[in-house]
Length: 220
Ligand code: GRF
Image 1 (spheres, protein in one colour):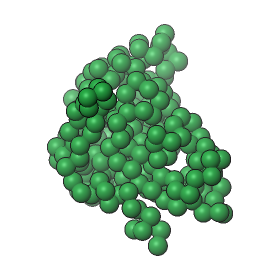
Image 2 (tube, rainbow, N blue to C red):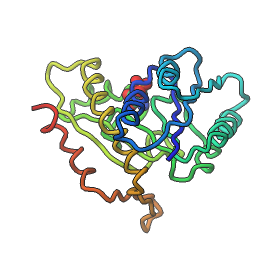
Image 3 (cartoon, rainbow, N blue to C red):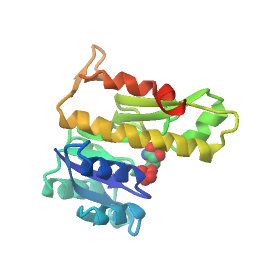
Image 4 (cartoon, rainbow, N blue to C red):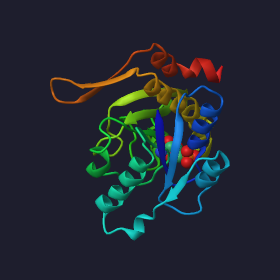
């Protein structure tokens, strides 16, 4: 499996993916790291791992579709078959999604469908939830609305502020994301539609359920 990772920032999830590949836990190749911002740490991480990088500044394109068309061209040039959004701060269009049907995945720092969009951790704290976490999902045309592939949960402590919560959720992201990609590599992910036309994900492994109980595994 050849993965293309789209980034915009620090790239700690990218690092977790690169480390999993290096350690043999993710049997895939990161074929390309593409950033819409020059000079970000994620690009350094890719170069250190010997992964080719491309910078495409969205500001150089007339609209989102034109930008995505160039992204598709770069991904196809590297024979990518799974597109991974890892802190990619752009809304993607049908131009990208139609080129990789059911093969674009994202990670989001909340238990979706709660708290989509920006400042998920702040939204969770303001809502007063007792349990927070992260979600890996298929990308569709909405904002963090695609079918859920996997989730990991953590408790919210009375002492948590946004930064503490962000760091503890991020630790779960780094466990969850490479594992979900490995499910794709093993052909364990199947996507179909329910009667109402909503996409449903089937993952043929019990380990999907064990991530939901990360509270016991990690916090005790
Ligand atoms: C993560 O919290 C991810 O869930 C969100 O953006 C952040 C990216 O962090 N989509 P990093 O660039 O992987 O460090």
